[in-house]
Amino acid sequence: MDPRSERIHNAAAYVKEILDCHGLVPTVGIVLGSGLGRLVDDITGQVVIPYKTIPGFPVSTAIGHKGNLIVGSLGGKTVIAMQGRLHYYEGYDMDTVTLPVRVMKVLGIEYLFVSNAAGGVNTSFSVGDLMVITDHINQIPNPLIGPNLDEFGPRFPDMTRPYDHGLIALADEVASELDIQVRKGVYLACTGPTYETPHEYKYMRIAGADAVGMSTTPEVIVARHAGIPVFGVSVITDVAHEDEDSDYVTDGEEIVRQADAAATRMIALFKGIISRI
View 1 (cartoon, one colour):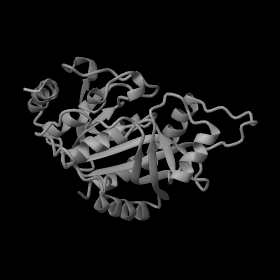
View 2 (cartoon, one colour):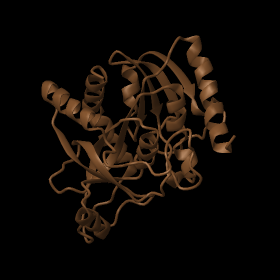
View 3 (cartoon, rainbow, N blue to C red):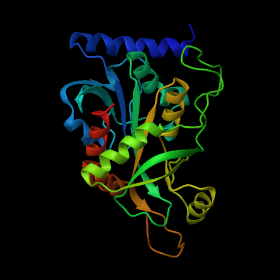
């Protein structure tokens, strides 16, 4: 067996053994970004599995990422949520960054919901906005580079619709009913861990990006490789500053605080969509 597949299946077998004891089979996977881990408070009947206990699983080191798998009920469905994701900038290779999504695939998820804290590139965006991701620009190394894992998907997967149109339509319905304002736009992923320079912001806007962050696209690529429909939301936690002479400084702790402040609306949106799929 390919060592990558062995690692995935060993981790999945460990998690499955725990979930079987509770009669849980997750159908929805959720990846929670910086400051957005509060969604797990709404998951009932929780089973908590720390990353450090799972064979072959890495540990998240990023600000605002606790490092647990949380399994339970949300919106009437059994979900498995990553309370903290893994990032390329932490020094992990792409197989490691995307390992949890493939483990969730083996466990049986049928949908993947992803979230992140992002910088607003679109000048009309404000701190606290929710942006439904309609497409992305990936500038992190592609996680499918290397020998293809044929059991998960084809060598050259289609990425015409990386974010599921049906789920986006459901989001529109739920947002309207709950009176939640949502933006829509393109998410650009870069490696980090530096925040963007003023001219990088300008470059990204010219390229067609509306928001920028350091995550998400690797997970989405691997999910789409495996045929899993994806829904994504960026919480705009800071906005582009293009004045090199200003005294503005991008603050990671403030980004987590802003994400936490917007989390209630994102949670309501996720729950509403999940309840209808």
